[in-house]
Length: 635
Image: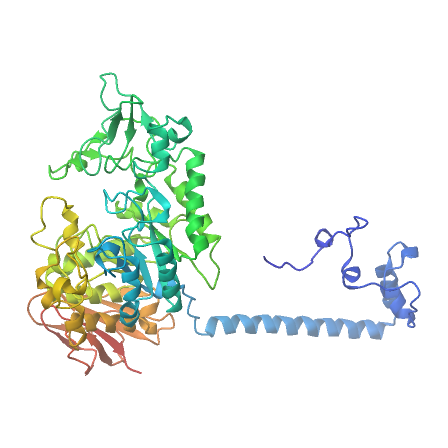
């Protein structure tokens, strides 16, 4: 509630007995009828009812009767007061202009690293209903590891009740925990333990579709409840008896499935077992709002929202156009999805959710709201909202989408994202997730070290996929039957060299990657030059003032090197990051580069091989193959 001082008659509170407004004087107290005012002059100052409230007139008459000397003195005094006030105002302006700029206050999610945990692959506690799967108690048992790593926020992939057709992204009950992961009590214990360690917990929210086993869908198809049928998108067949239009599922084939009992098709932009919700139905919107509130009431710290562009479809259900640039690789790309993605009205839905989340935020408990939006950079930027009233940030997949891992391509990707960022919007960076091959597989472990430095020193929030801190790679020989091809990047966390990598005492749900005996947490914890140690040092280095704020300048470095300056708003703290993308050594001359302080020397705070701490001048900096360094300006 905001406070506004009483400033005019309309602001004075109504007297609840008589409906009359009280004046400022009456508001703070009144003069009793029997009280005597001993000073005649004072009597003239107060409003006298007999004079019709003309006390000001009486006072001005009294002043008007004084002599000319008094009037001259009054004019001089008025002029002096005016000059004094003017001087104070001028001084304040000068002080504001010359004082160093204050550092902006940052929210916890702006200074944190968000660590993505794929629940069934992180740690099997052995206490759940199934073995060989990670669970909530297993995650809780590893919180000390994450805390020591410097992680301050954990994002869990879906843990809701689900038939697991799409690994939890087919939700059958938004208010229940999947028994594979434990119980609601286990979740409460995890949330409490996370908060006790001054960390945050984010949930994956899946609002575009439910499971076909959700009670809403079952009430429709089994009981023919029109109320619940309207929760989904149903259409009659076309004139030939086929699907209503040519829309495609992202997982292949038509986006429509026929239900004989209804003699209609329902829309599913993902698997047939994932029917799309109908957001043109106000009841659906209210249901989803209530679900958000359910988890916010429980105390979770924010959401990552899945598949945002798919929330609404074209009202007229028009056919989508053929894509002239289709390369024949992915059938889904054969069409331009202008009637099924980012349709008018999606932003209004996100804004409503944002209002709900903001109702649970305050300065001491800020909630974060993140969106998954796979689209062009310009389209992604729109999800910040025109008034920053949508997502705190939509995930930035520009590095994940980079195909050529050389300095030129990565530099251009960074420039494209940074250049499109709306004013005052907060950036973020992602190198890997559960839907894309691991960075260690894509670029090799040597360059992966340097890319972790890139991720953790670019301006904005960094999100890491579990295991990337030790250089986990994809499973090369994923069994064909019973697995999603993406399960290759969802393998069990590699904790040690024991059987099943310390993940489980039972056979894991998906095989462990063969390199677990050498690529694991235990081995790297005992190696002070490991990728794990590099990651830990970089996370803690992010607390340095030069790396906390969103100030960033790309440097015009040589072809194979990416360089940039980071600094605090007052520019006292300066960091220079240089990363060599070549497999050969390079000497980078930074003396002539714009944004590099000419009068300062630098100390190597971190190198990717953790073997350098020397002082360097602002001229030649030697970089080994795939080596990166963070230089901090010395005072």
